[in-house]
Amino acid sequence: MLYIYSMNLRFRLLASFLFMSLVLNAQPVFFKDYRPLADSLSKVYQIPASVILAVAYQESGGGISVVGKRLNNHFGIRGRVIGGDTVSVKSSYKYFSKAEDSYVYFCKLVASKKFYPSLKGNTDYKKWIISISKTGYAANAQVWSSHIIGVVERYKLY
Image (cartoon, rainbow, N blue to C red; front, top):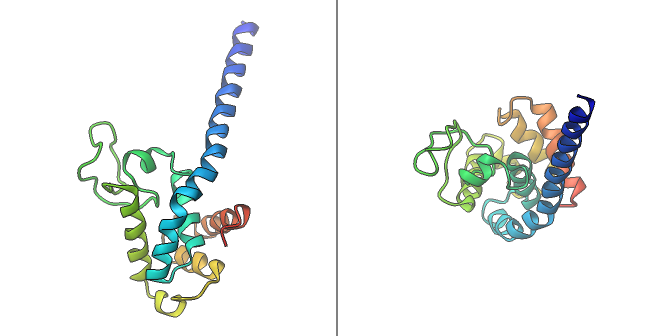
């Protein structure tokens, strides 16, 4: 019995290690793949690219979450699933035909908020993140904003 438990523990540790390896390896690829898009949207909407990238990274697990991969939703945006992989994904998250569309939608969503005119063009990522969190974007605004700020600083997205 002890042998079986030991094998099970080894398997769980190996699975955990492999998952973390996937996430860690996804980081450089994720930022490399989506930085040009975030930069171009930053010019259009005047939202810091670091904010766009950090929110996308956090909400999609670096692009590898089920919602990120199957629904092309890198921002955890809720909405009806229309089209997409609806047979195997029952979700309250919005489906996008391609991940890039979720970036545009996020920027439009932020631009529709009351705080947007006062921050438009401001490069202070902390002010943006705190303002977004106060609009109800996440269930726990304080925890969410500290996670997003952490992503910006950990990966030097500024």
